[in-house]
Length: 118
Image 1 (tube, rainbow, N blue to C red):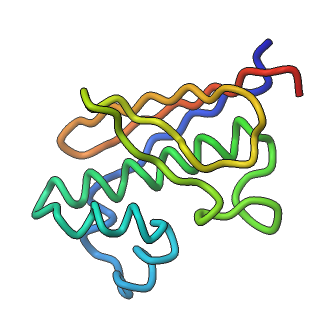
Image 2: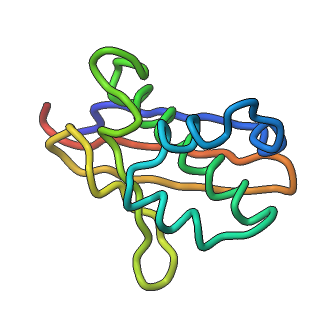
């Protein structure tokens, strides 16, 4: 049974002009995600950050709470399997989580589907 579906589109370029980039990045990314981010350079780093931001937005919509008091960026962690498939490995939902990320030169689109009996 589908519990929730969330979708988000984010402009990658907006992450290139952050006023306080270090503070924002550490707010959005978990320590594990931050380590992976640090290994990225140039456009790939911006795509990574925008993708993780967007996935977390999509998850919060599917979960039904949005990001705020009940759910924050640090409650969610994304990693990738051996072939590059994204997975949300840390999250509060007790069912199955499906995630998709797609990039263009300037945008990232993500979708999260929560599946379970909740």
